Length: 453
Image 1 (cartoon, one colour):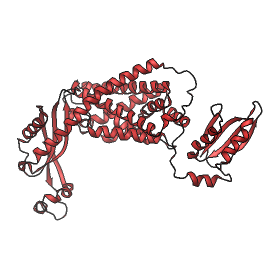
Image 2 (image 1 turned 90 degrees about the horizontal axis):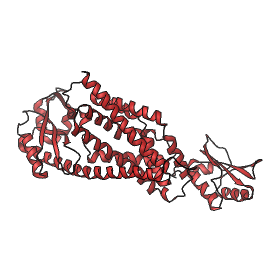
Image 3 (image 1 turned 30 degrees about the vertical axis):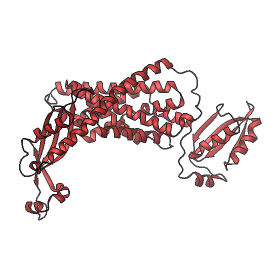
Image 4 (image 1 turned 45 degrees about the vertical axis):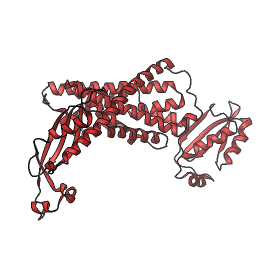
């Protein structure tokens, strides 16, 4: 429920009233003593605000003099039930004024924003190092990155250069703070003896999935940005969507900081490229949603005076972002193609009859740098094995297949996990084996991991 408060001149009072009553809107007219005007107060369903604005603007009534939209708990008017039924279940995006106001409400002051970004990065760092998904999820909940990630698109479609500049700057320095905080905490853990300096970072499950851009990570970023854009244009909250955006950004920033602390430039570059690629995808997805919904064609609301950002400053920031986007875009495209070839090469190698007892669990590709002209440095394949041990030549077979497909010579590391059959129920190992490969997917849930070799 919304309440529209609009001041119109006395001469336009009857015109405005008739325009609203034609659409079954109930209203009251309050004379204003100090000015030659009246205040219209109109209770409306949330989705009716846009129609009310259209009704007044079609009659040539200026709304910029004084118009306020507030929230209401309930309304009891002669037409309230009719309006609720008319607009129930309909999707009507927020007006441009409401969109800017909601986007501004998502932005924190710079002090609390910086503090929460640092704290969320510290939590994500601890979660990655101890391989705890619950702790990593906790870092996403408190990260305030959703506001800056959304306001860049809003500023673009409404022509507010101040909003664009603030958003881009807050995103860049916020994630920079996150990386720096993660690096400091990770370095204190490493050099303070709390974590083994020889820790193999790619072997950590939560770290290994963030080594470089890949198709799935970009899909996550695009989906998060699209959901955020749609959520922003509705009357509902965006807190849950903010968690999704943080999921795509904060753990990756923490991974970059950890790689810096471990003095692993290749890992640092790979995770940083993933972070920038995801950030670009999120922003483009939000902007795409707003453009598709037609906000760029709507009348742009007044920004309320001069802003703190000149177009030259905003243009410089946009130019830097564009250069980063082009570099990261080319590298990401090349790495995505390579990831697909690596996956197909691994599948071809594992399908050899000599490897019937193996099943691929995960594939992690580590790149030498972000250059599109440099291929992968190392590929780690985790497999589950039953029965006999994994053949020693599996890594060689995979490396050969990858080289044939990509013309790149890479180091392949196979990480086997040995399983034994459970004794649940009356089933025996021979009964499991007799079930055949067609039912392996259902029997895998009965396997008990022993110890990775």
